Length: 219
Image (cartoon, rainbow, N blue to C red; front, side):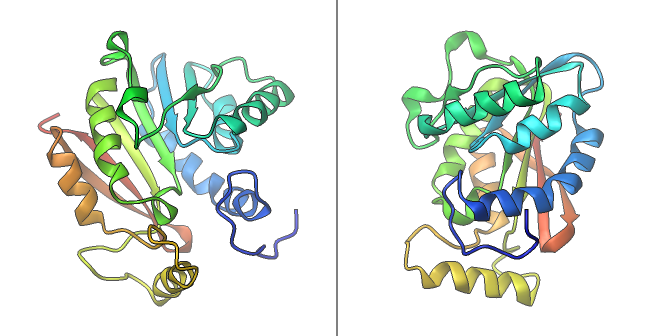
């Protein structure tokens, strides 16, 4: 794949998303190696998109079982094809999870059944309102000491941390799609507090991104 940045297109199967995914996957893998459980367990990905991330990460964690999810079921075939191409036996078939639709959030038997949840590059093109659903899902699905890892570019306390993030926000805003643009960490913290979750750590990442680490209050 060319190193040249393709035109902005948030569709999960676009060249732009593939380019961004290839650029950020190694730094994210480094965080996962630090934060994911060392014992056997289950890990859920929200907004899996094409499945490129979960299929890249899974072989590095043979003791873990990964569960991709997305609101757009059109991407499920692509996730399954990547799973087959890579021979990833520790990835489940994708499941429908739409953070705007509470009916898809979880089944009663799923309570406390995941040791970690991660979500990559969603908030810059999604409404901040999905943070509430994300935090409610996490509070239900995570084990007592489980973590929710959210990767992407964010504002911090109302401020852009770099000029490049300001420029990226301005580019997103120029498309005049209401939900496009960098969201504020403070809004995610507020949503977390509504569901017994709290921000545990902010990890600086390359290309002026962050990994936000959330867990249960007091855990």
